[in-house]
Image 1 (cartoon, each protein chain N blue to C red):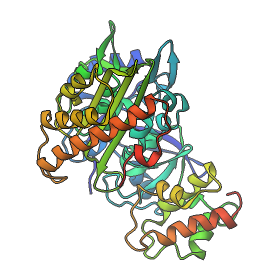
Image 2: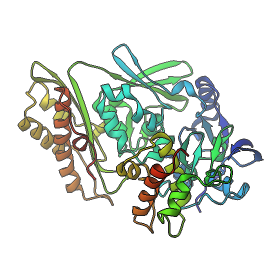
Image 3: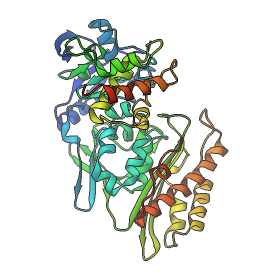
Image 4: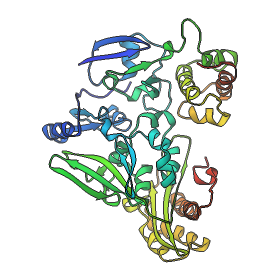
Length: 300
Length: 155
């Protein structure tokens, strides 16, 4: 039987209240959102906070909307809500591709976008997706808000730039012309963490790749990003040969480790293959082609 | 701390520890043992109950998180003495053997059919993909849910 250790519990009634509670209790307090990472860790004593600050009542953090040329996602948005959001899927197919293969439908009902990002698991799909989309994280503290690039949000496994008395409140994704995106994951069974996964965003202009974003999950990529492959593609035509070369570069520059999900050399192979496949999907979508769903998500 | 919630239409108030998991509250404090406590790691889905309008894995939800909310368990599936079409489907199609996964499977099936009254087989398999059955190979569970959609009418 697994039960969490004794813990105090506070229910935040506003973002400001949550921040005040965080400041009062210090580093031994943890934010409780969906709890689908934190509660299992508490059962195993991998996390042993003294106080939980429940933010599930903060409905002001549950939204997905367009603001100018940006998509704004409140961090208490449940995974299921992001998957169901027409506006998110219309502009960022990568988000729906990724959400379809995150955990399972029941976990997605309660797990939150912000919780996944702050858990900062190196295998977390949305971290790779937001890195590929070159998103921005909005972090609120008692004295104001600051913005941090999605690519600078994670400082290491299970570590982020969010300070002890701060809260991640919003993710912003820029909507740029000529864009297409996609996400693919290989996992051992339905609902599992990835053996490896790749997300890509491509922006085309005048037949060339104006910009590219490639995110890798579970593959040991620094800040979840395949920067060298992105750099290779920039300014080149999106030909099959170039997409394959980008995959090879991504594979050569990541640092997967062997574990129970697979040996490092297999994961490196996946990094290359998935990068190329997901780039094909992103380029197809950027060109306005209809990419069959079977080609755009997990083939398990 | 004080917890007040509605379970299957009845309101309950109890004093509980914040660390108490919802599955244990339902089984041990309220005696509603229809919800099963399985893997404890949010993998198997035996503990699925509804929290407000959606199914959740109650081994990974603290009971205090249900304060002020509505919970629906398998004991709340039947209405006015009439089995839910999903329950009838599991009976008709032999949708269970040992029965351990069944309450969670049926609550997810009810949720699916409320949102999608005419699901494909793939829709059913996707809906229950976070729940484990070690008896049926899922075939009869899928048949049972499709039976409920076809024969059962609205839940």
